[in-house]
Amino acid sequence: MLQEICAPFSSAINFTPEKIPTTLATTIKYYACLDCPYTSTKIANLKRHELIHTGKKPFKCPQCGKGFTQKIHLTVHHCKV
Image 1 (cartoon, rainbow, N blue to C red):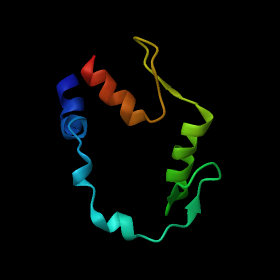
Image 2 (cartoon, helix red, strand yellow; image 1 turned 180 degrees about the horizontal axis):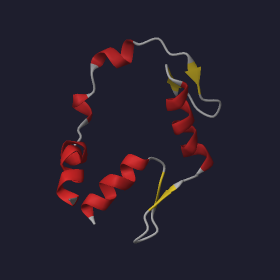
Image 3 (cartoon, one colour; image 1 turned 60 degrees about the horizontal axis):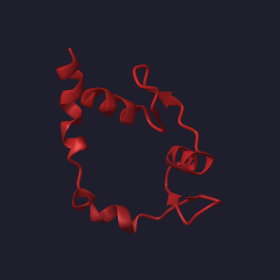
Image 4 (spheres, rainbow, N blue to C red; image 1 turned 45 degrees about the vertical axis):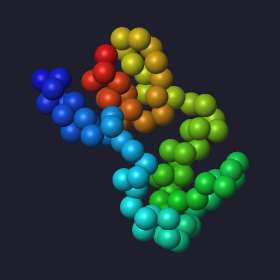
């Protein structure tokens, strides 16, 4: 069961910045962070980014108590534990 859940994330664990499409760098940005130069075309991305500044980590591991800003990071953590 755990292998089925973790399989899609195996490439995410080995993520390298070179895989980012260059078209993202030329996209027009509409939403800007008030605390730093971050901008995004999606409000959801900005709200997720703002967690960096607030320090909130709403997704907690039930086994070790470690907190994460995104559910996907918690899922990948479970695959490693």
